[in-house]
Length: 602
Ligand code: ADP
Image (cartoon, rainbow, N blue to C red; front, side, top):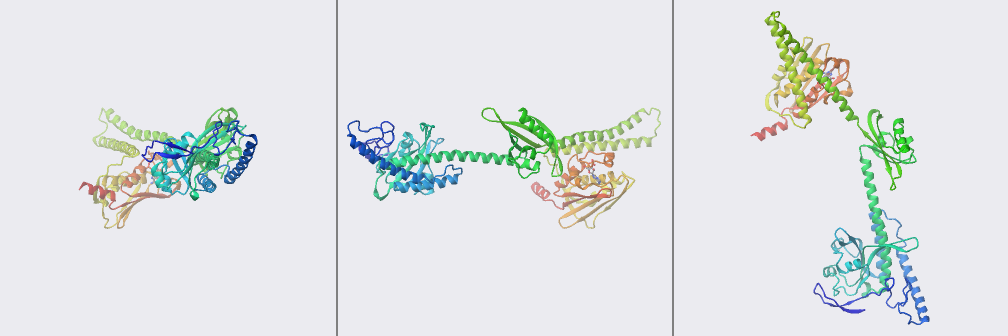
């Protein structure tokens, strides 16, 4: 022991006892105070002055002591698991080790402080012995300060016999954590080569034991013991940190792969599947496929060939295939990519299966839509052009005024038809862009509107009988009159269009305290069940001879549904093919949205 004068940054007593730990001048290992030989490298510590016999006796005594210490270390570390892969496992292992350390060194408290390179701090971490969670949270120091900083920075053990007066300790910690004395050793990881030569040494933190029991002080023997134990602990912590990080990354990667909408299959170079995500399991209709030969899981010849040729020729490729999944035809785009190892050697192939059914459907619908819309635009234009030409060519006054009037009214009607179609298209595009249609709310007698629609439609057909049944005492409703008229107009027009052989078209109504219901029934071509919801989507039409003959752009019902929903209502269809259809919509008498908008205006 030496007495040293230390300038104290805290202004505390500066003359203090400091324990300088003897180290071997050759290998820097800590030594027992009275050692004459280094046990690590065998160097003589007293030159050649010692008598040989005495030296041999001393060596034997020390070897015996080393044997005892080694036994204690083995006891403490015997239960340490080889590989810790989870954070709770690590905490459990370290807690066990800390208890043993405290027992062997007769310490009241024991704690690890790990280095956080980002903050440049040493931070106490769980598990610890004799500290509350709050105290642990508080126990953090810059890696350059205090006893912890010294042991970490210089990678050497430090003993403090009187924590209260030692200027190196941090006053606030000493008081708060009730520390009397302490022994601190670096947590150092050593990597050795095959011949047990040290190749790398990293200090990842420090290990403290505080307050020697029974009023004692920590001695050099404790230092040696704790240095060995800390080395074991550092190895466990460092390995576990790497494994935990890797395990976490692996789990995250697996979770990401599993949650992908696209199917992913990784095939090893030997043709076995090493990974398959749940989307791929669904596509290939299997429970699990990992470990199986790819040919057992992917039965489609074209896909199998794609993967096998990628493995064989080392050339990435892609393919579009139609597969039946859960009985439904789906279109998949399959792409393969090579999985390479560090040395660019091929380790396998990853195949990704993306469901592009919707994209292809929309593409098909769009091209069908372009041709139907062109047709829809051309029909009235042809009529307009024809009648205008006829009138222009009539130099000799062949057509009388009445006939001319009829021609002009046909032209007028066709122009209206064109205008309606263009307006509908513009509305679809507005809805597609997420713009709500402007609503013009007002209170009105709905029966009058229905009568107007039916009366107009009657003039358009001679083959159909249109019947309207408006319930007695039908209440006034809060709605957008033009839009409500458009809804019924579309439904009645469709009923006429899709009843080519004529028949009765019935518009019936009913109401209760909160809402009113309107149903349009025809006895026309009907709609197959699988189209009941689809026909309300844009560009969707039932594809059969009847519908092809009457023509249409497939946007009427899409707009109708949107207009009904704007009124906070809903629409549905019931139908039997060949028997007829009933379209019904139900709307609140006073939609909340309308009341809110009106309230805002006043
Ligand atoms: P469009 O009539 O212009 O094709 P709609 O959106 O109004 O477009 O209708 C979509 C499809 O629904 C129609 O193509 C037709 O196949 C079917 N449909 C609509 N109304 C009826 C009906 N009353 N009877 C039979 N099929 C109908």
